[in-house]
Structures are given as C-alpha cells and as structure tokens.
Length: 333
Ligand code: TYM
Image (tube, rainbow, N blue to C red; front, side, top):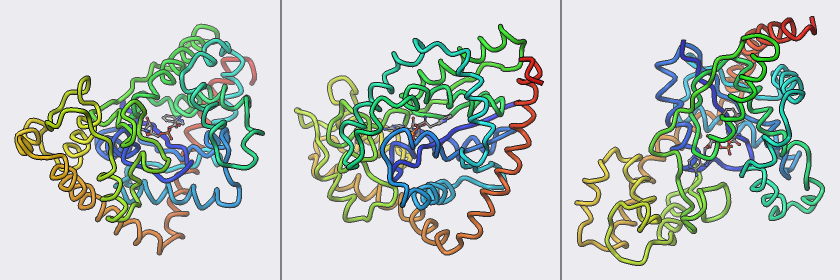
C-alpha cells in the first residue's frame, strides 16, 4: 500500500520552490496512492515569530494554494495539524525516545535560529532558543507515522528530518514491538530550487529571493529581470559552474515541459535578456490558471472549510487507530 503524506508551514506566501519541490509531486502522486494526506503545519510554523492576528488568514491562504494547484479533495485528505491533536500526543511519546543529539545537529535547527535573529517581528527575541525549534523533527515524525505513511514528497532540505523519522520508527519498534515501517522520500528535479538573488541559498518566502504563486505578472517580470546570473554569458545547464542560470533553466523546464537540452539549443547565442524575458512569460502563463482558480475558490469559503473539517474527521479515525496500537504496546492502555 502506498501511503503519501506531506505538509507545508503556513509561514508566508507559497513560492515556486514549494510548488516545484512539493505540491507538483503531490498532485501527481494523489492519483497513484492508496492513502493521501496533505497537511498545513500550523503547529510547526508557530516555532518562529508570527502574528496571531493574521494567522488564520495565512492558514486559509495555504489551503487555497493547495486546492488551486490541483490537490483533489476526492483523492486526498486536507488537514490542519492543530485540528488533529493525535499528532502532538504521539510527538510527546516520541520525545521520550528521541535523544537531543539527533536534533541539535540538524542544519534546519541552526537555520531556524537564524530566521528568528533576522525576523522583523518586534517580539522576535522571545522566540529565541525555544524547545519547539529543537523538537520540530519529532513532531514531523509523528505527523508521518500517525498515518503509517511510507512515501513523503518533499524538497531536499527535509531529507535529514525523514532520517530522524526512520530512526524514531526503528527505535519504537525495537523498544515496544513492530508497528512502523520505514518511510521513503519522493524527490524530483524541483527538489532544490534556488533563490533568485543568491544561488547559494534555497528559494525562500522572503522578498525578491522567490516568486510567490500569487505574484502579479509585473512582479514576476521585475523579479526575473533582477535575478542574478553567472559570469560567462552562455545559457547552459551546469549546476557547478553556472548555478544561477541552471536554476532558471530548471524553472523554465519544469513549468513549460520543454526538455533542458532543447532549452539550451533554443537560447544558443542569445542573451540573458531574451532568455529572462521568455522565462518571465513561461512563469506568468503557468501561474495564470492557478491564480484564476485561486480567485474562484476565494468566493466559496464554506466549501473550503467543509473540505477541511470532513478531512480532519477522517484523519482522526486513522490517527486514533495508530495511537491506540502505540499505547497498547507501551503499556499505557
Ligand atoms: P516548509 O514549509 O519549509 O516547505 C514545504 C515544502 O516545500 C519544499 N521547499 C522547497 N523545495 C524545493 N526548493 C525550495 N527552494 C524549497 N523550499 C521549500 C520543502 O522541502 C517542503 O517539502 N517541516 C516541513 C513541513 C512538515 C512536513 C511534515 C513535511 C511538517 N510535517 C511531514 C513532510 C512530512 C517544512 O517546514 O516545510
């Protein structure tokens, strides 16, 4: 049985990295798998500074992003993490068998600390060194294992978290008896989309580094025009010598369906200006139907809420069944 699970933090507008690294693959996998669950990681996103006043809106925006991008509620459950409390209950249980050494050496732990340092939130310092950013991968393991999921479509930087998930599953099985099978990542060519401003960083939710799925054509054109390129002027794909241009070619390739070789041929002898102008058109054209669907969905908030609540009821049944098994094995029941 293929059981797919994935999630995104509602910590800002979703960008092309989120789409190409994760959601695009979700939409493909939802047709092939036996169980499919996509989550808004609202408990994960409160580990870094956020604004409670706009948080519900931000969560609903991500739900609309999922639906507009093609997640099909007839095939997949769409849930909010905080509405299925079994996730956090299992995370507590997993905490008791997860050594701190598995967590404090993860690159994302350091990254999240930096995010707190750099945050514009006036109360940001109060989030410093919170337990949640350390414990984050344990909650992620619980998200995945509570549904006995085995295929996880994510971008590259989540791989170390999936290793922790498998370590926790193995340790649980060793201590209390076999319940969990190991999980596998599902990675594709979009697993590591880079920042448009600094190809040493991944595309993120901030400023000109990324293209938000909701960006207007003008914003997209401006951001692509400003995107950094590499020193020599050929438009060729080589992630070592031309990381910035290769990233732009990857985006072109994944959104247009054109093969990378073909794109190189099309732009042989042409300038960055021509290439960037065409790329902007590809992105704008790709996002047009997405944005139209998004606007349509905005008109029917009751529909969106009912998709969530129905999904969450079904998810609770699955989650309860695993939690019961876990508690029985552990002598808690
Ligand atoms: P988050 O919200 O940081 O990112 C969501 C998804 O988008 C992918 N992604 C990218 N892919 C390619 N290029 C990029 N530049 C890029 N930026 C982001 C991420 O790899 C991810 O797949 N911890 C998770 C959320 C989570 C989760 C889970 C995921 C919580 N529980 C269980 C899978 C299974 C996170 O913070 O993702």
